[in-house]
Length: 354
Image 1: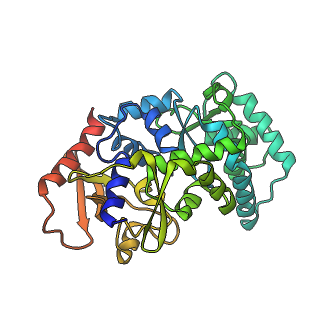
Image 2: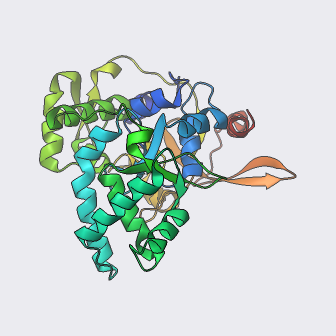
Image 3: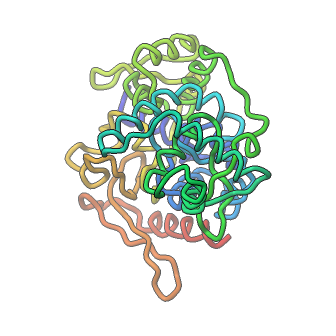
């Protein structure tokens, strides 16, 4: 498989060329999950992949609970749909609980199972009837009720409550993130048998992230190597195998056609799926430039995507009340059409204006 074919398919599968969705919920369902450390940035990660997305379109879907933000798959934030959240949590909750317990103990914090249980009961009580509260408000509630002496450990309690399907993201309140009861936010969410869940997760990933390797899928999904191999095996008839640089890659049959992408340039947000969802990122950018796109501590920066390759960085600026994008490139790009840059900036600015 050629490098051009890899990037051409990824641009299409990730909805960065010829996007197929207008509805944020449909897009998130297609992607499986969208990493979402920074809520401000993930709104644009969805917007750049929608046919004609606006900030209002994405925020409305979030406020209504059609898409939810929670810790799932790996111990980090993701956007998932209200239909998918329960079966996805069931797949990853025990891994995330174990990781969080290890992290807490490493920081000298030891929370008993009894305390987690008391906290969950209190969350159910104070959040009932769609009473969405911020992290700070919930910390104060826990202190006032005598469950904890200070609010320092509230983050651990909330993450555990997420994993036990008690809470998830609520509607923003005064520009601040809140928590709500999952039972009220996603009452129709279904659980699935484990085998069906891992097969569905693999199908979502390889439809939306092809071409990708087994290691890429393990990294993105958080599944063990054994589970990931089983998941791929369950959808084996849907996958086409190919090789690139001694790696075995899988392409979902949905993309078994001639893919030729038009010239494209996007300002991608930090933690974007185009980079973060693959263990091996060399197809997207030269290894020497990796430190300019992400560091060794898991922080990913806003980057410029040009014809499937990451070629630079950008940052949002406000000049005379107008949104501007300041750019820098890893190397000179003499063949870069300046009109493409202007269109990308205009697309980003329009997302916030519409």
